[in-house]
Image (tube, rainbow, N blue to C red):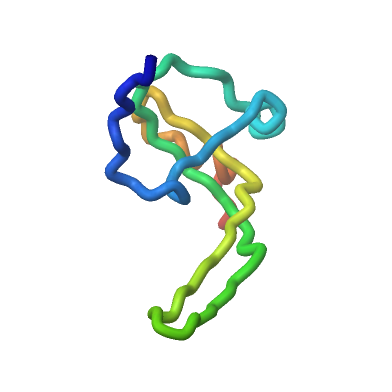
Length: 90
């Protein structure tokens, strides 16, 4: 029996999927489905492309490799400190 899946208002490329190994590397634990979180991430641009096909508009794409991430469940103000460490200007 087919189930009706609610269609997301966001395009495919906006979803971040992390497998167990990725969560371990980033130091992130699992959460319950439906939890809302804020996260801050550092990423490296790994590719940029632009192309055009006859009869269609020009397309631009960019790929980002997330290298560091912190998830804030409590919405506290120390997310940047945990992500970047102590004051970098000192």
